[in-house]
Image 1: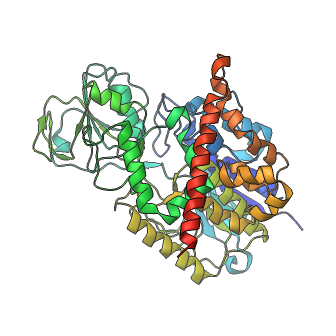
Image 2 (image 1 turned 120 degrees about the horizontal axis):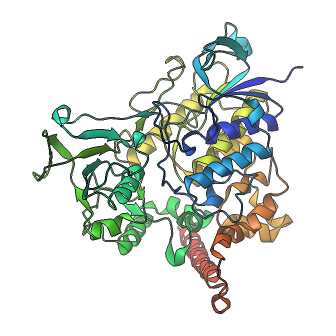
Image 3 (image 1 turned 180 degrees about the vertical axis):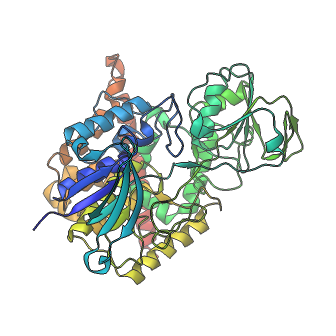
Length: 536
């Protein structure tokens, strides 16, 4: 029997791991990439391209390297804990080279449409029409499965404001912003306080005469590092912490709010929103408070209207002689090459089971990969989605009935509406650890803690109480990797390795020991809570 052919659309962070997952399951991947390179938005280019997102020249990723790594390919120990975009791209190239992925990619290809074949209800096959951008030749092929890996940062969202069309200055979107050249000594208004808005405000504040940062709701600011310099995600992404969040969400939110305000008083800095820290996607930025306190960035309310030379804000204040308006207003996503009867996106809202599957299809042979916004890293979650999707296409894993899929979709919609502020930005939010577990359950690779405790108590302790890194999901089930144990046991050594550039014998182990002390406190609280709950 001929192996099944799977079309992978996009060769970015999700597309690369989709190719790898196909190969792992004995499928034949054919990847269509619209550009000349892998890496998606993580491959920096000076020239903006419509429909193709790209990082800024100075972008540093917000998740630490152990949290964002693919589950069977740890990032080199010498790479920084939080990597510049050039290191992220280098890692993707290493991954592609190691698993020989490039030979499965067709570059400079535009997918024109993806539609069900005539006998789809029986075969589950898809017809894909695509154009070679170099030759302009058009081809149609049939595939047994489709993995859509185009992400959700393609089309820029450009809101309208009264008077903006009469504004005589320059208006650009962060999609088209790369470097600060051309902003020297300018008065700049940035609209939006997402991560891109914060990064641009910090960078431009060093050369512009003044930066104004406008926000409708305010924002909470998280640092990449926690107490004593540990990566924040490495400290918080563990089972005990996840349990506390699940059992006492309001208490956890209050504690986090206090912790965040201990860093900077958000009231004093004009940043405090009306909602809790995790009722929106917080800004990750280490430098913005310093730029605010020195006056180079001024926080403003939402824009009311523009004049030909200035802007009036909702609080009645006015700033004149604005040279440039930078819209840090995010993106809208969609799938223009797929019939809306299959996937319909409205205001960034889409109904997909596990953010992957259209629930009403007769055959689950098409999956969307990476169309979610995690509190955590996107790469390992996309990888888990690919592991599930390829096994479903192969017939080794199965999805629940349509009714159960719809129940899951509506439950997630209800939980999101209850937790997050209503906005176009908060429609595809997921929490890293719970969502990874959901997907792992379907794949069949979720860790059996009791079995592991009997076989390997030391490893079991690490898995149950230390940071949950992606390698955890290679210990059991399909795709089990022999290197997973070593990767888990050495994850903190790799994390701290790039800091070991100047040996200090007198303080040897201080940072690591402080982490173990904090972990012991978390464990004590965890077991105390379990004991107290058992009394009721």
